[in-house]
Image 1 (tube, rainbow, N blue to C red):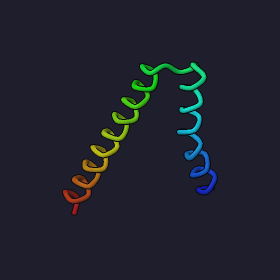
Image 2 (image 1 turned 120 degrees about the vertical axis):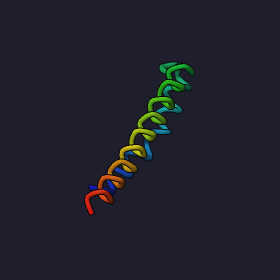
Image 3 (image 1 turned 45 degrees about the vertical axis):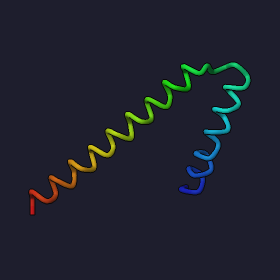
Image 4 (image 1 turned 30 degrees about the vertical axis):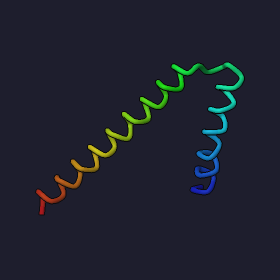
Length: 59
C-alpha cells in the first residue's frame, strides 16, 4: 500500500503543472494551495513537539 501512496504523491506535481498550463488553475489558486500545505506542515510539527513534551512529562 505504501508504494501506491508514493506513486500517487509523485503524480501531484505533474497534475498541478498541467492544470496551470491548461488554465484550469490560476497563480493565486496555486499560491493558496502552497499556503495550505505550509500551514498543515506547521501544525504537524507543532503537534509532534506537543506529543514529545507530553511523553517526557509522563515519565
